[in-house]
Image (cartoon, rainbow, N blue to C red):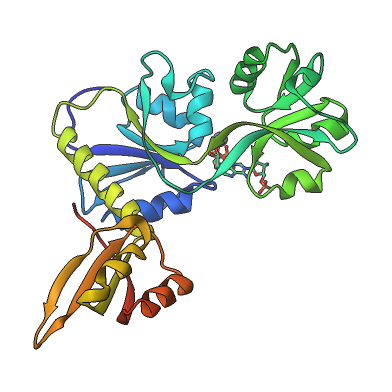
Amino acid sequence: MSDARERLRIAVQKSGRLTEPSLALLRQCGLSFRQSRDKLFCYGDGMPVDLLLVRDDDIPNLIEQGVCELGIVGRNVLAEHQGGTGAASTSPRVVERQPLGYGLCRLALAVPGGRGYRTPRDLQGLRIATTYPRLLAQFLAREEVRAEIVVLSGSVEIAPRLGTADLICDLVSSGATLAANHLREVATLMDSEATLVSSAREPTDARAEIQELLLRRIEGVLTVRESKLVLLRAPRAQLAAIVKLLPGGVTPDLTAVEGDADEVALQALCPRAVSWPELEAMRRAGARSLLVLPVDKVLA
Ligand code: PRT
Ligand code: ZN
C-alpha cells in the first residue's frame, strides 16, 4: 500500500485515554474531520490529512505497512512493538518524532503489600504478570534475573490476589489502582507519554510537504501551550535587573516610549507560566503596567 498518494494519513487511538487529547491537538493544528467517530476513516478538511481511528496497539504496524505516515501512541506501546529495545534499536521502521506531553505514565513493578523488595535480584524465580512481556523480558535480562513472565491481556493488578502471579509489571499514573489493590510500586522500567511517531522512511511524493507542514504546526502548538507573552514598562536604569527575572532566560524586544526618554516598553515570549511571586519581584525591581497574556499561535 505504498502507491503515491496526495493525502497524508495519521492514526489515532479510537477510544481510550489518548483519543481526546490527540484529536484536540490535531484540531489546534487547523485540522477538522468530516465523519463521526464511530467510523474507522475520517476525511480531513482544512489540510489534506485523513484520520484513521484504531486500537493503539495497531498503530506501529499500520505505519510499518505504509497504511499511515504518522501516528500518536504511548511510548510504551512503541517500545513493546520494537521488541523492548525502544527507538534505539538497529534501524527501527517506526521512529519517535515528538513527545507530546500528555498520557504521562510509567511502566513499573509492584508487589503485594506484605512482600519485601530491595533489588531486582529478589525477583529470582517469581511469577510476574504483565501486558508488556517484551519490555519486562528486556529488564530481566539486563538485571540477569530469571523469573516467569505471565502474559495477560488486561486486569493485571488482580493477578497476585488470584494467585496467578507473585507481582505485576503494569502502567501506573496516579498510583490509585495499585493502592486499591494493596500493591506497592518498587521499580520503574520506563517513563512514557504520548508521542508522535512516523515511518523511518520519509514520503517522497506530495505527502512529504504535507508531513513537514503538520510537524511544524504540532511543534508550534506545543511551544505555545505553556508560553506566555509578558508586557511591561520600566525605567532604562532598572532594565537589566528586570530582564534577569524573566522566566526561561529569554531575550526581550524593547521599544522606546514616546515622550519619555528614560522609559522603555518590554515584550518577552516566555516558555512557561509566570508566577505571582515572580511578577511581584519584577515590580519591586521597577517594572510597571505588567501584563501576562496567553499565546494562541507561534510560527517560527
Ligand atoms: O483499546 P486500546 O487498545 O486502544 O486501548 P488500551 O486499553 O490499550 O489503552 P488505554 O486507553 O488504557 O491507554 C492508552 C495509553 O495511555 C497507554 O498506552 C499509555 O501510554 C497511556 N496511559 C497513561 C495509560 C495510563 N496513563 C494508565 N494509567 N494507560 C493505562 N493506564 C492504566 C494502567 O494500565 C492501570 O490499569 O490505568 C491504571 C493505572 O492508573 P492509575 O492512575 O490508577 O495509576
Ligand atoms: Zn491497547
